[in-house]
Image (cartoon, rainbow, N blue to C red):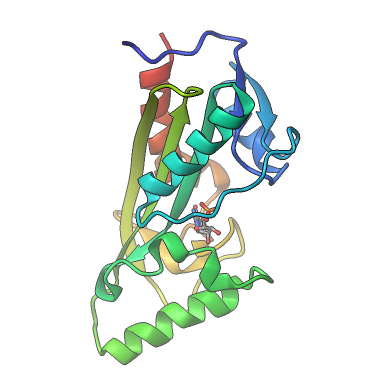
Length: 200
Ligand code: IMP
């Protein structure tokens, strides 16, 4: 069965962050009617899986089955090779409840120093899942590889952007114009795959 969504279809976004809705609606070319799980009063599930794909699927499945509508969820983060993929699915949690990414980035640097490793290879991953209520699901993953730089550079973007320099570039994500980041980011790559799968 081809997993498609008709233009104008309702799509629940499994997030309680209202800021994410317009951004994701635009990434989907304004094709669907986006409603957030928060607007529907759905509870947020615990992210108990051990992979980005697992957590995206868990959140999409949870929202779809409870709302009776197709649901989209994402899970993303930074993985550092010398730290065996950490912070990975714990990327947001390393910043603590106050979302302090200065400390989170400092933690990455400290742990690398403790490892005594010169390997600065890292990558961002974005997993996207669409689940149909009590039905099938579609999962895609986008990735961008790069190198960590300390101290971080640039004030654009969010999260770990200042310490991540994508492969083949001389600027960090924190220094790049938003459009330049959007052209190569893990999220853009995941959405390109999702659209190829979901649209006619
Ligand atoms: P999520 O909202 O649970 O998927 O957590 C994603 C976390 O990964 C964010 O809080 C950021 O710390 C990090 N992250 C994901 N994508 C990016 C990015 O494009 N730039 C910087 N940090 C990112």
